[in-house]
Image 1 (cartoon, rainbow, N blue to C red):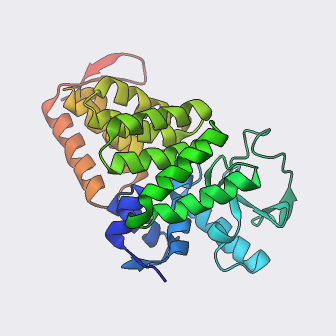
Image 2: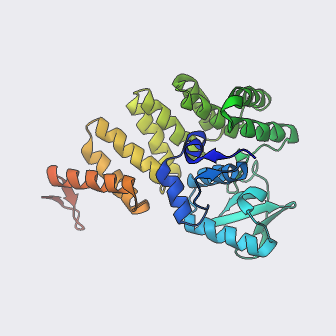
Image 3: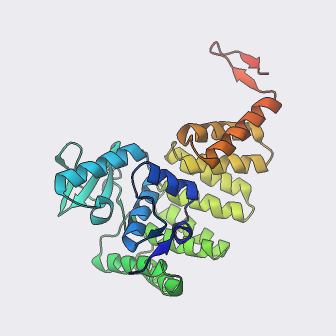
Length: 300
């Protein structure tokens, strides 16, 4: 069985080390130094769920409830996770199961009900056609092995030829090009994903990252802002937006996002950096604060 190192996982899934650590600390994945393909599928699902309004605590509660209700070992891999209010439901055996309430939920399908968004191991906005789904799963497996990434690229292109609006395939192919530093191709694919699904916060976040690499900070900022507008609790988008503002010299604009990041993700080296940046801005900038009475008051 193929095993992947921790660095392989971070590279393949385009994750930060602190995010993987945070999921481990939240009990969503075990702390490992090597990972199986099933582990990668679970982590890919969590990466998609990070761009939703569902908290890690709610994800864990839903997963544990699904294990108890249905007897699954790993619901994030064995069933399709679906955003259902503030927690998860799971598509299983033709039904949409809400494990927290132990009820069956109405399932109108991802194409007709924007409130139910499939984010399972096959990616965001999964296709309904069995042929496309099978090709996508094959591409995902090929993508995880460096020697077969070229074959994965071919399959993703084939999928997009069959279904031009398949956002998950566009994102995955874009990320391959991003990791290969082919930023123009990555930008084109991330934009394609945002056009295919304008409510896909992860697509706008990834688009912001590649625009940042291309030194197009104004465009990157607009993409990060869109991701945050879709998911105000998107901690990584706040962090990267704060960095982009700082590089433009807009320290006051960055302050709000440093503080928001610290509130959303208060532990770890990135939180420490955000706290230090916010402290530096507050100590060196003369800021105006709006009082509760509506008057402007000079700070510091």
